[in-house]
Amino acid sequence: MTLPKSRHAVSLSSVVVAGKGQISSDLAGEAVILNLQTGMYYGLARVGARIWELIREPTRVADVRDAIVLEYDVDPARCQHDLLCLLEQLADTGLIEIRDGMAP
Image (cartoon, rainbow, N blue to C red):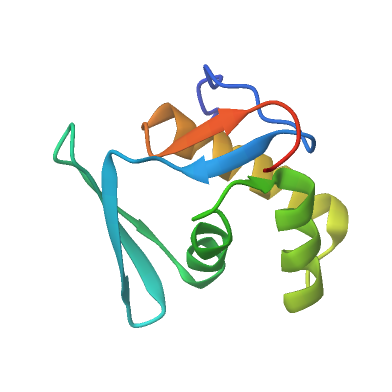
């Protein structure tokens, strides 16, 4: 099965941050996120919840990747691919903002 192409381009130099139009909570090590505009709930498992925690403040994607590689037993190339895909999906659902440039 092929996923549709994202409308949002994310790169390692992008800065990402959780959007203001959502609320989230930790539930047994997983993140539960409610998009306030659509009323849709989303869930992220353990690693996704850690990524969500890292992007509560504006953070460079490369820094998120580096943190995940250090904390989990994952190949850096695989981590980068999966991270970029996840961030594009989160952007497509309106849960995060993507900015170019450096984190403040």
